[in-house]
Image (cartoon, rainbow, N blue to C red; front, top):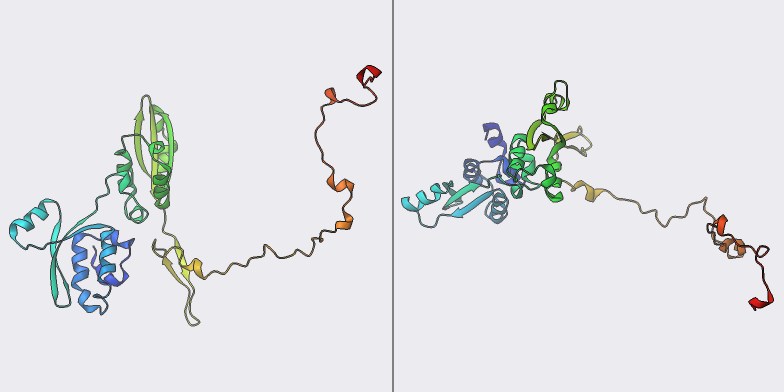
Length: 271
């Protein structure tokens, strides 16, 4: 993590979204500065819960070299977390994103388009249509995706769709399907920004919309319910104005089968 990001990050502003930007060493660095925060003890459980959305965390209860080596063999980083005067050792490893099932609404905004296509390619080579709708919804929350299936020799035709998309910043995944190839193009969506309502002496502030904050401002929006309001142009229903014509039922008649009393021959034998 870059130094400037370390300087402004702390446990207090950690969310289930931005925690995916951190690495194991960053987590230990945040806890190293946690003593400066007065409420760290009271909120320890909440901080741990946020971190566990992106990291595996195990407390090292037996501090021996052979035990530490076993954690490190599993790809975990071991370090100390000090809260006030109490110090604990923890083993931490970031959740890998290797399969479609590893994707969620928190981490989809913190991977590259190349990484996304790598994960899709691992899904048995089935292409975009092999993904279920819930996975597609997660992906489309963070990426612009378009697909096309064309003969192999036409995909990289000069001036074609592939060249246009690549020049526009899209990453490409090619999945061969016999003599044809499915091309999946993906590009990270730009971050949505929201304007915070400024105070009387402030200028409007534009800030990125965090996944954990989405929808918070909606609670302050009051929607006026006008469903039962009377439209001045509408007339009240007047029972006295109802006539026989008001209850007329219309239906389509078949000219070929139309039967009138004038055409019907009625004899005494019919009675």
